[in-house]
Length: 177
Image (cartoon, rainbow, N blue to C red; front, top):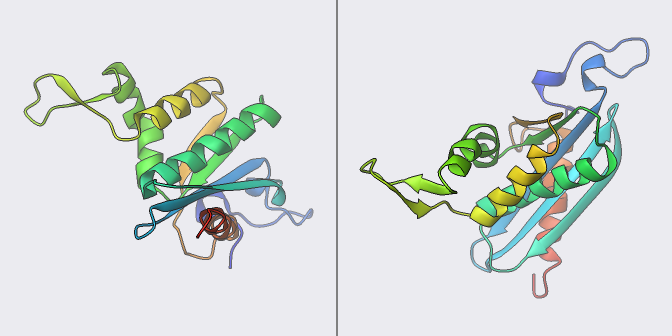
């Protein structure tokens, strides 16, 4: 197993902590069980490659994308409450969340949180999870030092694996889970 995605790995200096792993790295993950409709979210924060915080929770009547986005939202809220002014990377294995945060949310916001219709005329269809996207946009707009990046899921990255396990724990915390 490896600690961090390839993008932030480097050879370790004398301190034993790779320079590229120093700083704040937060892994966010969501999960969803279609049969029950229950979902879970989590984040795990590392500073200088040491776990410093984590949180998780569960939601009834949800979706996979909503849980992935909730995990990112909870991570950025945490960063904005305890690490404002510090550069941070939120790692997610959700292409939906990463692309949405990095490019699509700006377009959606300019379009009144609506998609352009397939014919290209008008802005009629409200985006899925609009309330979550608005909340994510608000939090990310408050902190230009937060970067959202993709990491491969279920590939042995310790932060992602830990976040995955906590998200499942959140899902199971729902009564009857």
